[in-house]
Length: 107
Length: 126
Image 1 (cartoon, each protein chain N blue to C red):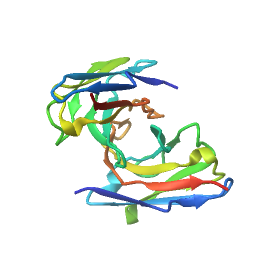
Image 2 (image 1 turned 90 degrees about the horizontal axis):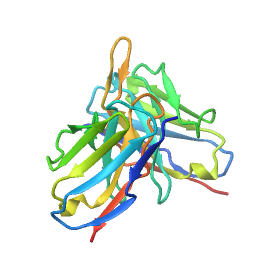
Image 3 (image 1 turned 30 degrees about the horizontal axis):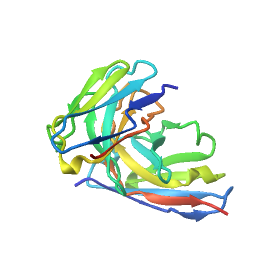
Image 4 (image 1 turned 45 degrees about the horizontal axis):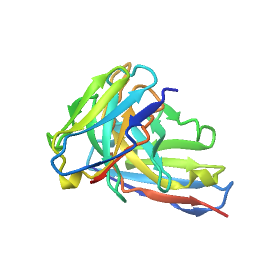
């Protein structure tokens, strides 16, 4: 199976910072990569699909990039409501494996 | 607004069975693949299973293959997860989720899960 890794596992940042989270697949998954945001006690929320397509209603400060094995989620200017855990997920064939997550907290 | 509501969670002894249900509303349920995803306490997300719109194609994570069965009843807008031979490591919040992608006549295209339920908690303990 294709394995998904994320880096860093956690980061501390301030409001207004630019934040980038990396996701790597152990084999090429083309652009079949999604990103989610999850806050404690809540279900995940889809942010990005197809590596770079913004889900309806998601603020434009979120963007996704990459293809093949290397991907990134960027938050251009971190807002207070963005402190959460972020997961990538491969959607190319099954299993639709998630990455281990990146926790973004307040510096 | 599209909605999913899970039910059926609870406390169960190891080796026993449990059936989770998920009721869908406000979208054309029969047109979409549906997933189950779980999250162990303090842990990350783990994809569990997917079922095709017509219910004929089902795929599972290795960790549940042979023990869990996903099914759906399109006439009732419901998806189910039958869990047998439960283990302590199956303890988690279980979410059902709608697949954003679509299936054509010969292929399915997966784009992630755009609608999620609030989850139902399963605890496997003696």
